[in-house]
Length: 113
Image 1 (cartoon, helix red, strand yellow):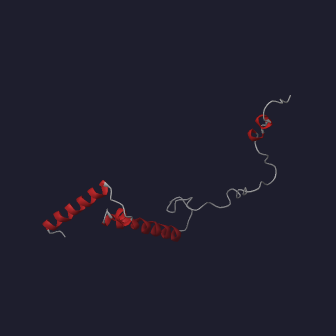
Image 2 (cartoon, rainbow, N blue to C red; image 1 turned 30 degrees about the vertical axis):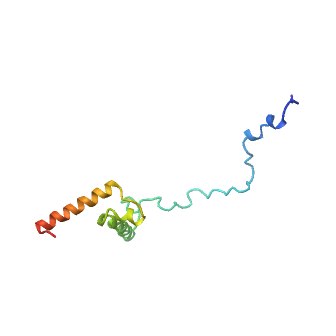
Image 3 (cartoon, helix red, strand yellow; image 1 turned 45 degrees about the horizontal axis):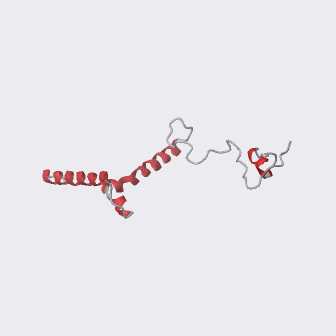
């Protein structure tokens, strides 16, 4: 039974019903076929149980080792990343710089540097 009181849009339930999913929809891309290929970085390159040749494993290990060395710039100067971006270094970075300077001074006094 329909009510003739008020706005008819109030009584419509179109916004509460799920959209019809028969056929292709506009603006929605189809999902790629499952398990066609693994996405990038889905596997750990240096996995010992991975069935790869020794050469490929060595190449991955060297690549992984070279990526670890990228952090050496911040090890040299803990204040560098913040200063490079125009920010004030954090208290932790300032403490690290103090400790590094104290250790260098101590080693110079001992004659190790």
